[in-house]
Length: 395
Ligand SMILES: *Cc1c(COP(=O)(O)O)cnc(C)c1O
Image (cartoon, rainbow, N blue to C red):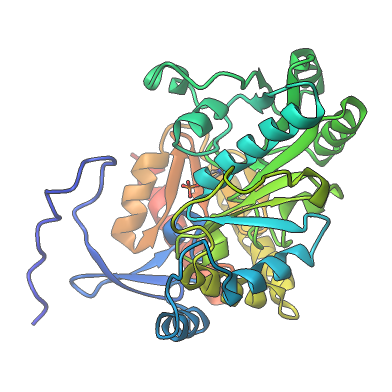
């Protein structure tokens, strides 16, 4: 007999409307609730489960590391952190790494590093140009760097020093650059804004502008990095490299892990400037090693691009069939614009049908399947989406 569902815990602070479901188990592309019902999961912990739920390679790495050494404190070296840093440094010019437990904390580190560099090398310049509708996290500084409507007053006063420009509008960037500017910070694809890509040409122009004005280019690849777009890092699509970059979400495969990367010449933290009790702990870093080694295995990223193209084709067909809007994104970070404000209702209808989706905007459905999804799983998800969208669009 399946047990009777328990009422979701009422001692938790309410920070999000949650359905009356408790998920008790995950396996690959699927999540299972306490009644044993399976759901194809295209949320995957908000794009954190890069390899799906509880992939064997991650379970083995965590079990082995947990039995060996969980946390010697950040005051001592540990092997998994060194190994993960060297794996990341091998794939570009950013060869100094600081590990954190969340994307927001990695972005805080990037902001601090840029401000310190400005103090040392740019006459105290400290302003970081950021963008309307950007999302960089939920600490005070990263909320201030974000451009979500309403966030400027929600926990006022803001942290100052984050003038706003508009994505894909180079003039709007140039206009806010002044003597106090030290950096430009942006997401290669604005995820929370509804999967809005920066044009590759815009990214190249921002890179050139930063070079011309002696500014740091900071890319927040917390959502777009670690294979999500079909390349290890999304900036590879534009053929540029940042000076600082943050990673998060997928890097830990579901375990809290994030990273700040910098070119050596900008890595100006000195002892005492930065730290954190959990920063670079071997348990989280062992998870990161397992994930990144998998991403770098022969053919893996090619597989992400292939399956991503299949999903994109299917979404475009759905859009044509049901008269919806555009399909945006790259690799397996995709969105379907529903045109009308039916995204939230579609999330509910899809869940009833057995598919978990996310609606970051009233008119946007965001798809973040596991990077190792199979063709069959993509086709199943598309069929369930069609069923849900038909039901909701026909109301
Ligand atoms: C999720 C996200 C963050 C914040 O990461 P947390 O781990 O939730 O703190 C920052 N930037 C981007 C682009 C994100 O998608």
